[in-house]
Amino acid sequence: MEINKLAAVIEGVLFATGEAVSMDKLCEITECSKDEISEAADKLEKEYGSAKRGIMLVHVDSKLQLCTKTELYPYLASVAKNKKDYKLTDTQLETLSIVAYKQPVTKLQVEAIRGVNSDHAVNRLVEFGLIKELGRLDAPGRPILFGTTDEFLRAFGVNSLDELPEIAPEHVEEFREEAEEEAEERLNVGI
Image: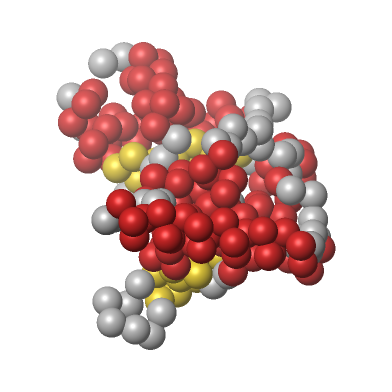
């Protein structure tokens, strides 16, 4: 394969994957030798180094990766700090509030409060980066303990958990009564 074409293929693969790709994998997909891959990589490295470009080619072990130039990190940091637009369902919000107020809490404890399975809600909140695993409870089965993240604080505009609004005592009593009624209904229908 001609070197310019090979360099373009390598660049495209590295850009598309966003991760380091081994020289062996690049040889396999291009059907070229390691020497040819190295020559094309050197060409790319020189092009990125001499041009006023925002990326560079990095050698990681026997892998290649496209990365942002280090002098651009302050600009990236400002983009990374922007709030994410979460589309949380009522179920996810309910689960998140339980975790926020009761943390560290297990999924079983969340389910006991909600009265329903919370697997999906907990998994989505972990995916969103709003909650994370804090460790394991020292109990049979060693269940995972969950708590909120810094992303949770940023997303809800609070600096610490101490800034979360307190639940008014009259609401606590209402919640307790509702929970007792639900528990009684479940017993009556045999759940």
